[in-house]
Length: 499
Image 1 (cartoon, rainbow, N blue to C red):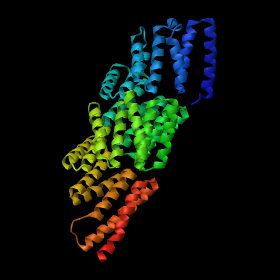
Image 2: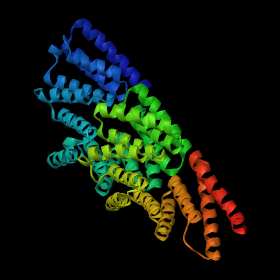
Image 3: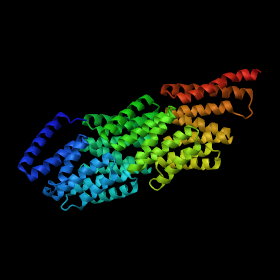
Image 4: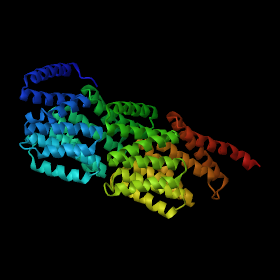
């Protein structure tokens, strides 16, 4: 995003000072102005220009003129650019050089630590981040930390969310938001809102999640931060996927992807790309979804982005399941499980991995293993307060009981799951669960009276009607074809009985 008028005036003044300093060979002004310009370009998401400024300070002949603190600031600025680009190893090296410099101020050291924690989050070291931040908050004064305290609390809450510790994460974020507001720290308040939106979306509080993410987007637009804007676009787009607002989701995810690709901000690009792949899979565009997810997964793996690597495997497993290829799904999902178990065994991601593994084993006829996996996922979701996945797993358990011939249990679970998911506003999941419930009622093999059959037929019709209404609004063509096939069976039923 171009610099606003005020920042453009500052840029022009600094460029003038730098030009003059270079002509006069003024050490202090060459180094100081380069650092100021680098910080200015960072604030405007102009990463190529920022990198050029920081490298100027770190390379000869300017390097020999820079003091230890100035070299450290340049290394930290360069590390920030490298993190955004997804170059985790190079960022680690820059941060190590920054820490080795002599005479570094406490403020700069805190910035270095924050960058290290961001890198650790990408690499899946969530517990290390929590421990390190707690130690920092215990030993540093509020006055010394300043606005950095808000940033640190948000990083800790992010790590806790990724570990599945939702309640303490929510308390931290609410406290960080209040602190940022009271101090007039708008960027901190927006970041806290964004993380709250993610967390509340995970646990199924879609309305509150929507409110927080919408407010975060407004703040991003006002601040002119494309990186924050892209982040919150894909986060809101992901929420809209769950809410059944697929047109809005597609628009936001595509905007985030295009912008992040142009900016070369890897986290935002891969996150939005995986969101687009998930949407394609839901719409029945499975080949396209597989290609998009495979590309994102491979890039994330090469970059060392653990969570996005695992998320890519999870999407690939889901696409394989929807394509009726459970063996292929198992390969992706087992790899995801093996990788993420050592990082976050109780995380929302692990809940989804276990649930998908249960579905894959069910499709292969391995009923005992399927039930064990589904119950493991259900217990994890219950223990971490994850209502959304808990209700979805109820529907998967209903499908499991259908395959096992326990129709009464299946009917109870599917009916309950549809109602519970409806209270959350998870429209697609409601539609699919109603579809499965209708399928059970229509294909039931148990003996029943004519009155019971008539009642079940009426119930199947009402569930199909509601499923069709929701799926038509979303444009879920492949699911609508299933609805049409079941409706045709219902229409044929009277004729069959008349014969």
